[in-house]
Length: 230
Ligand SMILES: *Cc1c(COP(=O)(O)O)cnc(C)c1O
View 1 (cartoon, helix red, strand yellow):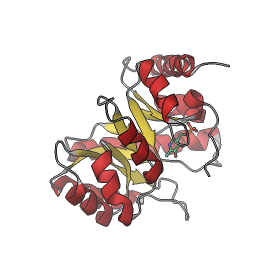
View 2 (cartoon, rainbow, N blue to C red):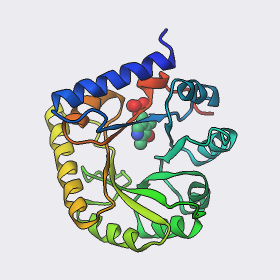
View 3 (cartoon, rainbow, N blue to C red):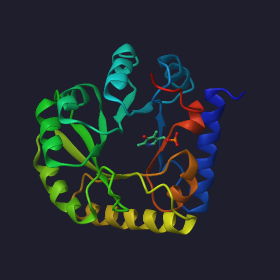
């Protein structure tokens, strides 16, 4: 079985190959290691292999890990799961980035509840395929939420995040990613803090990089299949 260090190395190699294919600069993409359901010991192994960016989906589990690993203080913690408003304080107090801001109420709460040693970096989650059951703002709601976030004192608007519809053909996925990239470029024209497009997971690293992602969120390809939550 491959070790976490070996899988991290392969993930970086896939990213570099995709960047090359896309004629993009090396290091123009960040790898977020998604450690949900995995034990703290796995995060430590990735840390020892030099990795610093970790993503968690569940508030309780994520906060426990952040607190347990407090002395590894150069880890950058990203919250990438749904946020209920009664959990926003825990997210604001423990994470450095939030990828899943999708309404004004949550943005305001995060700003009020964040301990401002430095600002909380936020991405707007976009429901790019207009799926009934999916979180995220619709395309025509992005600008309004972005303008609000831009006025909030403890948040920095860094960009957009999406989880595309699962059942798409390869071509539909490319179209979806290109649409997201266009929205990202438009947003950059309006807000100078915007520099991050979070899209792509283990199964679609290459199309995400080819179509302008600046941060891929990779779980399975680094840590192996998810442990079942109890
Ligand atoms: C779990 C998860 C990932 C990682 O998915 P893999 O397919 O394991 O790489 C990425 N983004 C979000 C929002 C997730 O919930």
